[in-house]
Image 1: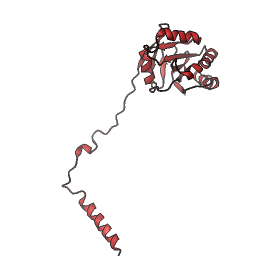
Image 2: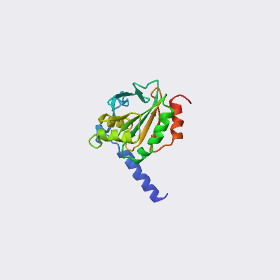
Image 3: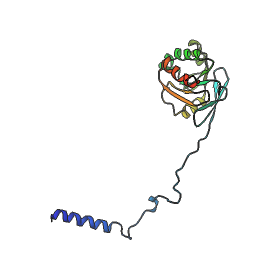
Image 4: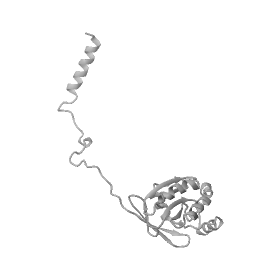
Length: 195
């Protein structure tokens, strides 16, 4: 018999028989509680947001398990939520595309632009100048509620980020950065029930 093999077997046996003796101290705080081992399931809690547009109107929406319910648009129009900033080159470059798809689908589709800038950095008067300069006809919202919504939408970090919802408020598609007319149309058709 190989001597190295014999000693290895002997040492292993000693550890097996002495490792779990009754005198060993057990830290009970490290033992799983078997009495209540149900996982913690956080229930969905709907949140309501009241976004203020540049013309002083309110766009009210509520989160759901499947998306967003827009008080004034539910059942009537699909909605594209556009989280943007006036200083963002891709946001500005995408404006003609957004205006084109909105015009094409105007009876079944709305864009709600959520300004991702603080009022102290971008006063309302400057936002109104931006709207006029770029001939924007869809609503743009201002204020702190915008940041709360951006956080709720998945903690928006990059702009533009756009979120498309169907007429019944179901989330359809997230767009990041620039998209072309064809890309939007493909998903808007789904959102309004054409496909």
